[in-house]
Length: 163
Image: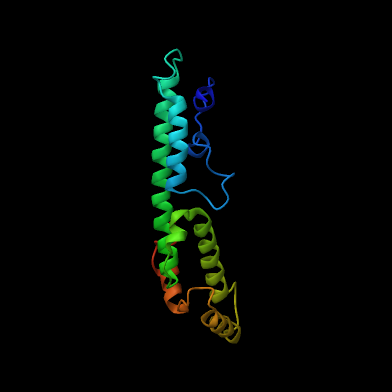
């Protein structure tokens, strides 16, 4: 494990790779997954358990850094998710916030499809655009967002575009 986390060739593993979180976890990962992976690996990598390995302190330090990076990433993902959902008039559920990666992707796609559906592409005839706005308003897929409010959030405020 020590050589995996601190390779001899100077590569630096990403935080998810250090804790072995990411692709194998369908639906993302949360605080409990980070804590569990950290506990398991910290027992094996602790310098006191590996006094004969010179890289053990470096690997243990990288493990701590990786856990902190992932926790910070969760905080940022939760903030982005709440911003997207609230822009569409909804509220993020506790289940969405526990493991926000999948919900964040879904809500970003929902937001983009709403914007594209309302605005259209190129020169859209007025009756066609009106039909799109009406269909959007009737749909429950978008947390019952108001089309005009959503367009203001998207075009007039930079928060959503900076995500």
